[in-house]
Length: 131
Image: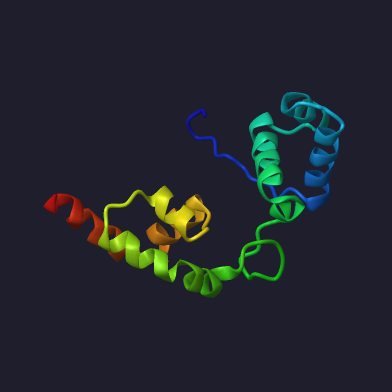
């Protein structure tokens, strides 16, 4: 990206994501879908990966309040992540393994640790220094 330019993001409506799935089901590849709909093919690949893993519900727009989509908001996420936090801060088990064991999204778990619980990350770093 050129110096001085900022990247802009836009919210993609659920209907646009459904159109991607429809074209995929017709046999279109991610590059062709991207060209057809004017989307970056990496975005299309990400949506298709979510669709194949968890179905249409995974493509609902992100909601910080938990009113729609799969994301349940911070309070709900805290409950889901609570046990995983304990393992994360007291062992050197890989994060992916912890997320898999508690059936959590890897990236969401990493985000919550870094954003809301930096003390857990510090505790884990001190464990690494001891070894």
